[in-house]
Image (cartoon, rainbow, N blue to C red):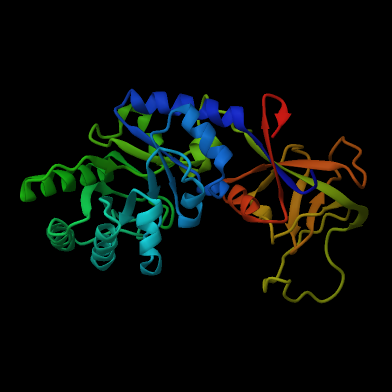
Length: 359
């Protein structure tokens, strides 16, 4: 196994999943296991299922296709593209939707494939990513959906934190519950699901702030990385189930400020430097093509991440007690975004470990 590589400790992910599933089940909440941060990898799906998730979800239909061998229902997280509707029906059982034209296309292709496709109508509560914002449009959309064959209005859902950073609260999720109740009353239907968001919503478990009617969460980073709202660690979970390991390719004493007139870097930005004199610097064979340096935290806390170019990660190792040399390996904690990009990069090796053995 080469470097750089991302090491995934499957037993820790399974244990995280078991703990969260139990906590959610005690509150009447089903857990949808989100695999997108690991590009729909089958080994992640396996341990999530072992941990008790009731469904698998991903944002890419290509990943759901990879997960076809599992019997659990599949959910497409990203709004369906019209160009992929046939595949959406083929490889997923449930879609998060907001556009009536898309829903009509789902209906058409579901009938062609002799299937009933469940839809969760997404409501925008202020984060301003996907979802219907206007109450009148919600009403009109439900009216149209109920006329269609091949699809069933399974419930409503919301996304929070991902774009606008709007945090889940008892107040905004109570609005979602009120919308569900109004739909049921106005149209004499029963909605089976109120999908209350992602891992950040678990912050409302404290002091029982989550409304009782919320009965589904779409969880990924909490199961795998042990983090929730604002990427903060969740107590009682493993936070080291994933780490990135990179190889040192240069160690030199150099000035901390470049010499010469400073223009734009390779990514069109003008860098700013703090003069700390001569410092001991290490370069690792890892770059922005693989992961943003902002998403890396060295396990050796005395190391400072200075930045990166496309292929080189620059570190200040002056203050560490370790005597690093070329060829040594340095390990990093990964934030959510770092895990996502490192798993996506074909230049980062993937190593799955279970019970102290690599798979």
